[in-house]
Image (cartoon, rainbow, N blue to C red):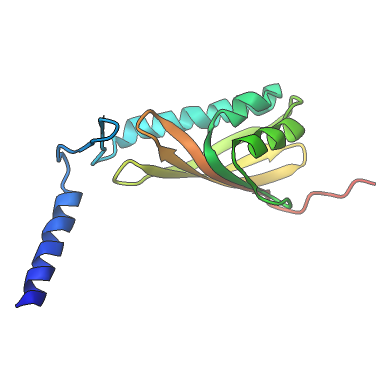
Length: 162
């Protein structure tokens, strides 16, 4: 009997967490908790972040690129060590994206999780050092989307320069 009661309570709890439109709030911040993604507006916001990233790279504006990332974000650039945290990201982007570059980014797909808290984007890139691809994970803070994790690499090894 206890097993049946436990299973019933768990089933009700799971159902309550998945029901759209439940009026719940984060008591500490009084920010409404999202229960269902507004996929169209979320995709538009993420598309804007991608466009801002591309514009920053084209302009050599490392600060604009860095501003798109969460304080605890991690990037995994191809053929390089991972970089974690705002200060390290700022140093990385300053070292690698302070000069204007002919970079083009094409979003292939943006998937927003049903909760609206996370999303990911898969796309392609073109730069002077070759064609590539990327995978970006976004986190919704309640105040907007930010990049939580980002990974990119070229489709073929970058040609060696002698």
